[in-house]
Image (cartoon, rainbow over all chains, first blue to last red; front, side, top):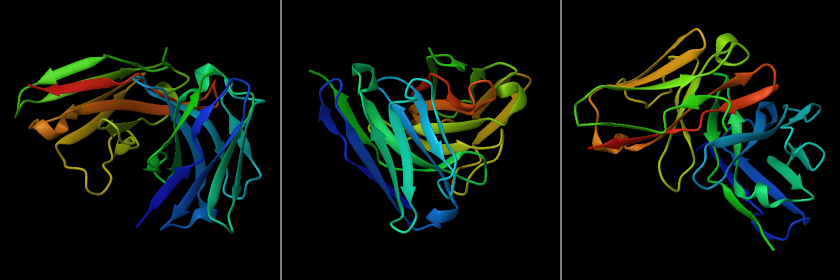
Length: 118
Length: 110
């Protein structure tokens, strides 16, 4: 079964850090472009970051550039998002998603909640 | 403020045909294909339509998509109670150099 499972979310104070992980199974992770997408309560999804299949190319939304770092370990079939200098406005459910051959997010994880609050 | 514009809500009765629209610009919908996602409360979005009008395996043919210029539409025919969900359009934005989403349309089946 094709599956993505995020972990690492939680409650953190403004200015703090968190590292999210996303474990992949059921598909060839090493050939897949992967993304992080977040969704604040009651709002639409917002793209955060992407990484190519071998990790040599990364792109970020302006809102997180310089604070977040996406990475991957193909041997462990795991995607990561290191989040530093967290702000209240970063509070969201964070999803990892595969960008498939149809030029769309065809596999999504269940999401992990990040709450930034003092 | 989402880059793509959707009406916040839509409604219909069982069996009816409804359409949900998505408006963008030349830098996004105008030059790229559009995808649609369906999301139930407390769950992750799921791909419903890709490349403007293609359905992934398992999606009923009651769902169809189209694109014209800088706008796109999702149509649902033979509306069913289980179609009650949030629907989001999405595409690539050449200016922002990343995917963008609409604010979502909450569909209510009366």
